[in-house]
Amino acid sequence: MLEELFNLVRESSHDAVVNNPDVPNEHNDEVVAEATNTVASGLRNMIAGGGLKSIISLFQNKDGQSKDGGSSLLDNPLVSMMIGHFAGKLSTKYNMDESKANSVASSLIPNVLANLVSKSNDPADNGFSLEKLLNSITGGKTTELVEEEQKSGKSGFNFKDLLNKIVGGGDDNAGGGGGGLMNIITKLAGGALSQQKRNGGGGGLLNIIKGFF
Image (cartoon, rainbow, N blue to C red; front, side, top):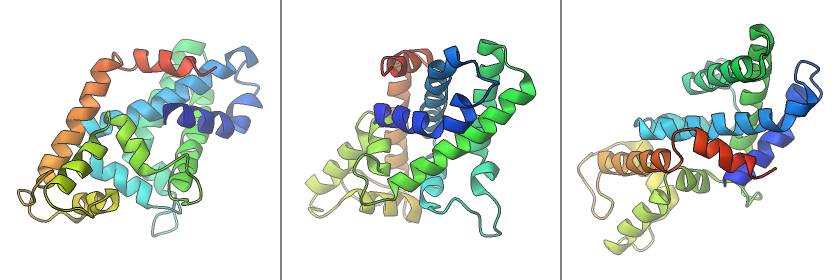
């Protein structure tokens, strides 16, 4: 899933990076890798911190717009955090002017996330899905939780049921197999934390991404 995300960022970077004179051509690939790392790490860190519902809410907003017609992506605290992080990297690693770095980040990151949300909600696109994304970020924990529920006697239980359980709330202590809501969130957070340690924070993940060049 990480390589698919990298390719999506590269496809989304045409205007913000490749055709942008503020980004030297020799840095194009590294900037794309840095943006991929920002998105992947940001989503993973949010889950590790217990913010799973925020990510699900982001991905269920298929049209990318808030109810009042504004851009929900730009208003989303998670997206704002990613933009700030990426802009900081552009300024410190590539000596880009702060205003230009903010402009690149504010253009690329929301565009990437909008495309990721769109593709994840497209049943015809087998390369992307929220299930695959969460499974990758948590080291396979979503599959593990679904299997636990199925073993407990819920043979028809699937990822959609797991999502409904998470966003629907209800009794935090109810349910067999994977357990209640807090148990599900805790397990997914634990999987994300394990991925953090395995990748050595953000640096290890960035090195993996650079291997896709």
